[in-house]
Image: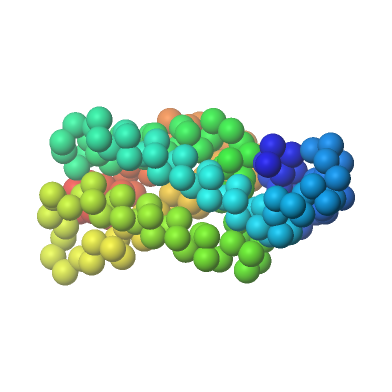
Length: 180
């Protein structure tokens, strides 16, 4: 898992062979196949671990946040961005390789987006949205915006500052939720 965490982040999933994984991990191909059915299964396990850890960090931040929509938005976004960017490999697996892997992570990605959407919906449930706004669709939209901001952070030559990412994401969330 440790070797895959680094190799799947860079050079990336498609460029990482079983042989390279096993060589880096100092295990035999047979030992690999005793644990995983293939590279795809290992990538899914890594992605799901990253998502579970992120969900846990964000849920804790939301529990400890002030009981206002703005307080929850700021706490949840800061927790997610700081946790995700604390390890570039995590950020890359969750936001770049998940897309580059083709159909390998489609279901895992859909489950992750649904779980984060539930967090957004629950965190904003006590607060009204604009007239006719579908809370689930708003949650999906702001999650997509946050993902794109993190992809920009990962791939740009001049990485935006983490505080700038947080400020922009909070602005997008607040405007989308009808509070900004």
